[in-house]
Image (cartoon, rainbow, N blue to C red; front, side):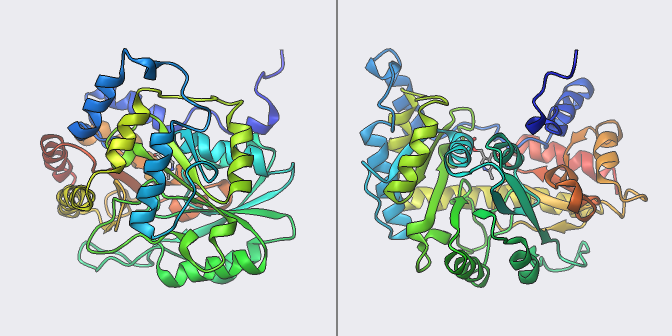
Length: 398
Ligand SMILES: Cc1ncc(COP(=O)(O)O)c(C=O)c1O
């Protein structure tokens, strides 16, 4: 029998995440590979979900999402970006950001259409583009040239000429993730301006993945690409409740955008899941209505966890590219892994010290894999006890 997997999905086999999580279990290691918190979300959110189970909310919600959640998404967007979206025609609730992205690709791409995106990339992007028959055109984000345990954090950045060269007459979409997984980078105003100018002059539709919108540190701020001049009318903004409310398993996401684009996404989405998470939708609506101070508080709390992990990694002799946002810190392993192979480092780390991390190379296409070979990602969205123990164990590397 020939291999059953369709050609468009070849190359998307079992991920290194699964391998590393299995290693964590087999060796009793602390798993800093996967990006999910090991502490609960706010009671203001969890209690609403508990109360909704056993009511009519257990049945199919309306296809676009319950009106209460769509209104809350629009109000939250207005509050944090000043942008108005009509909850009836410009907001769509999805099964996480992942479905929003997949439905957008299926809705907008003709076979052979190209999607320009930055890598390292979140792993669902390439698969979604492939399932829609599209082609990815990756542009590398370059890590800071030199990093040492004492050097100040330089941001990752893209080369404008490389970006412009990636845009061809076949380019249909520009897919941007900021704050960015896995690097923890937040695009600057100058970088956003380059993207907006390119999108408007080349008439590109833009998708911005903003799932880490509230997890930004050190007084930096996240600015949505959709807020730049000329961008609202061509941009689909994707976000999700998972990271903001510590409920990554709930898979409640949403899309905001101009009505024609949102209608297109809804057309694909209705035949993927149709709807999901009935009792969770009112709970996320409650969460989105929490006061400004609550959102500032989660960023402060995560910043503290970042600092614990970053100083532990530095003590272990691992130079850190300090993240400005998200759940993740990236280290350069060349000082402790003579061949500079991040994948080999991650495979050996559970035996060496009982900690699991993820090699950054898995977030690149083969074309640019060399750029991430020596880098490894650690998650810091973990309880104080777990982070403290992880840091103790990592010190044994030093
Ligand atoms: C950049 C990025 N986008 C999307 C997602 C997935 O979001 P959701 O769980 O809401 O589908 C993740 C999860 O790790 C992510 O890091």
